[in-house]
Length: 482
Image (cartoon, rainbow, N blue to C red):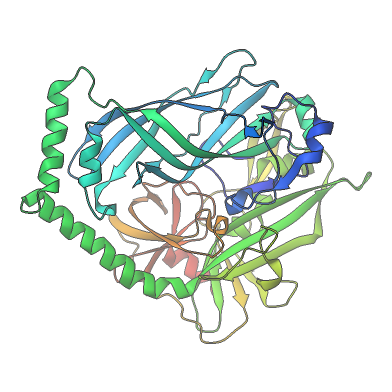
């Protein structure tokens, strides 16, 4: 479903999900399907089986959180490493990604990077995740450092939040589930051993000294951090007021169909779009609009399994910031969205296709083939048109101006946006530097962030986020705008 290097914002809608952890059979599981209302947008539509219970209590989560340990500390952040194992399962399977959302340690916000290294599970013993998860507590995000200072002497810590484990099934389970890949949402509410400086008294003293300086309101370090925190709040407040009216959450659905049996598989991808004109033009990533051109798994089905894209199944939706997108059934409220069906949304223009040859190994059949996929790069842009009035577009630079050099920009997007009842954009400061004709940021895009704008502190668009860490200079993308 997702390439090893990046979590692409698209996931197949799965008709049936076979819980690889359950000891009961698929026919029994089929009686317990339930559509979750907590999945990120890219994982929505998945039918989730309730994990089996014993005496009315759910089985323990199959993630075993073993230890949270110290990595590094400076005046900006506390870097930690989280060791994790996965319990034994009944069916052969491979975990490909582990994603995290809204994680907190003793109530303190913690950033945990997506884990992108695939590893096989065992039906006998727990399997250690191949490397610790990288975690960070960023001080400028916090209103107070006192809770962080109190962590230093703790011997355990409560981790809460949400994780999503992407699992690739073997051929037999694929047949039963009618899907190669499934995503299992796993809530976090775990007490984890937390002896940061065991056997390292000097390191303990160093970390405590840094935190004491940061907590002391009269210290230079604390004053500097306070200024940074206030600047961040000011940026969020002022830049957010400018950007949020211009941001839209986008979603494209489509089906790939077997012309002989008429059997179909449904896919979905979401992203971010932003207003670039007063008459309702939206700029976004092309992969959000025509995702099948960028997806090796879908292209394999079309080129080598003789399936076809059902053009009549292609649907596209858009919600503005602050929209209530969750229906009473826990699914996106498509009726309330701008859409192609309602003639309130249409594709206006896309960059020309730039197809490239790419080797591909089908993980189920083991077949090695060459695919023809849309290339990464400058052609990953599209312009949409929405209906309405009183649009507030973002400011664009002079097309003749030069792209910026190394700088700190603000990514404005909808990561996991539709997992909340209301669309709420996120503003994230990222470091960006030129890389050939493109730009590269020190942030790997989360689901829903393709097509998002990167702004400078003045609120002007500098780049268009596409995939992975790649961005297109806005001077290139804006030539597409009619």
